[in-house]
Length: 172
Image 1 (cartoon, helix red, strand yellow):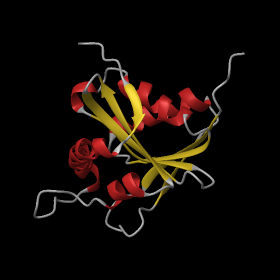
Image 2 (image 1 turned 90 degrees about the horizontal axis):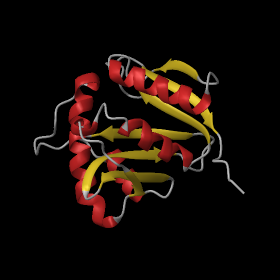
Image 3 (image 1 turned 180 degrees about the vertical axis):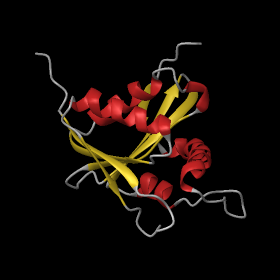
Image 4 (image 1 turned 120 degrees about the horizontal axis):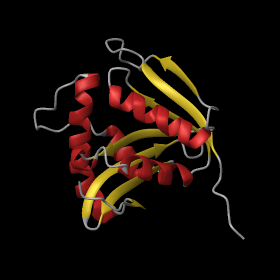
């Protein structure tokens, strides 16, 4: 396997078309666990995408290797009591390479303080990944709970992991 070098950067206006295409891949992957079919035009609902790209209380990041997109992350509630990792996606060709852990550490380090991350029990890869992330960031000082999905009584509750990320240390 080729070792990829990843860069994490805020999404710019020029990145919107690439992030919109990555969003379709993400939503397609999530349909396996959350259900739902694409819209008649073959897109998926994009309210969160629009919020991530337009709302000041969100941060959208693009992951790249050179000029190749590797994925994205959306963080919401920047001014709230806890940052919420609203969406996180790595393209299939880059999975299981360590890139996910590398980029999520970078995203979390940009927003120190309390964090919450939701995922689905049925997504066994996500269960293992997010527990590894929480342990990596917070040691054993993290919690996990199940919460109902708002307005979706037809789906199983989400799993939520909560932890606090320390501010990066500054070498002097």
